[in-house]
Length: 133
Image (tube, rainbow, N blue to C red; front, top):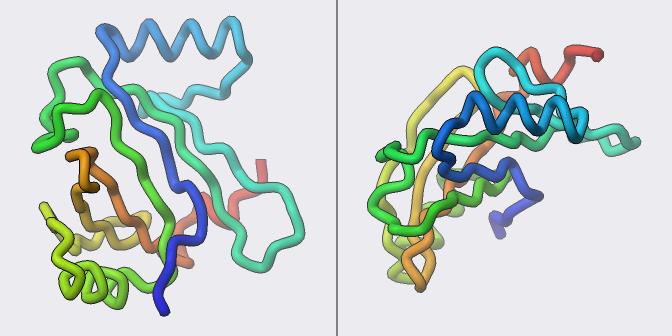
């Protein structure tokens, strides 16, 4: 059975994403990158190395649509196509994807309360998975 394998990221709206990122960098020591977020690399002995992303979005972004919630939950998955088929079969609302991007494959669904969930099957060749920081 296809399944979620972890939290891939937490995304939320902010009035001023750059200023908020600077505050988190200054006060909490987050390594905020030029693209505006942080990739927390996993540091354990698991064979499926990865990272979790933290990223503020502009308050007027439409990326979270059609949800009215001020956040999106991103879940890493091991088989996006298999999971999407399971979700379709269960009558879950799929609002986008699958789409291929440099970091892997993505699709978007809504939970029963209308929260947008991003499903992410990482690309094993994503340089962030092998880059040693």
